Image (cartoon, one colour):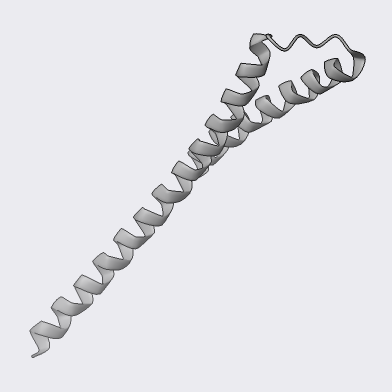
Length: 82
């Protein structure tokens, strides 16, 4: 989660900085709606969110796998006692 969290937050931060810059240009009145920076902003924010979710799901799967392994180990010990 740490690696994916850092990369995801970094992408979201870059997207938010470009969004603030675009909002400033909108307020000044010099914003051109066909700028590639708008697409870049959307892509970085969405990519950051997607990578954050991927890291969260990967962490949950690894924790679930560890829990299943412990339960299987416990069941083997119970079977040996019987």
